[in-house]
Amino acid sequence: MTRVAEDVPDGPARMAAARPLLQRLIAVDDWLPDACAAPHPQFYRQYLLHRDPDARFSLVSFVWGPGQATPIHDHTVWGLIGMLRGAEIGTPYALDAEGRPVPSGPAVRLEPGAVDAVSPEIGDIHKVANAFADRVSISIHLYGADIGAVRRHVFDPAGGVKDFVSGYSDIAVTPA
Image (tube, rainbow, N blue to C red; front, side, top):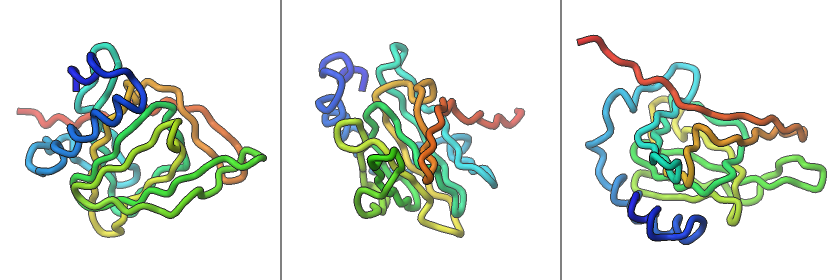
């Protein structure tokens, strides 16, 4: 990915060049450390796996406990979502004339090995949920920035907007 960031202009071209890299990464489910796959009983977790030193991209594991979901939110940068384990459902949204989020297409169910994309150019607002009420799901996200430091937005269904910076979940370290 570092070579892609060095050789390919940012935006849609870089996202397209990054897609096969993410597809190869999620093709096998034997590499994610247990500490980056640990769920929380109440909230989905966002573990930083790699951050480019120049913040050109970041790789993150999203760990979804049973039934967990995000609010409706945006990213403001391109992102690729690859399903590693379990399944998740993403529902795309757009803002109507009054600034309220409304579904802008059918929900997409991602199964292991599948990759979806978001960006300001193709649609950047969505809500994501674990497809299962009884088990953990894990997706691997590749973003065109240090997503944990990007100022983004949560959209209230009634029309309110709130800024947020997600940061990352702490990795639990077991004493030796």
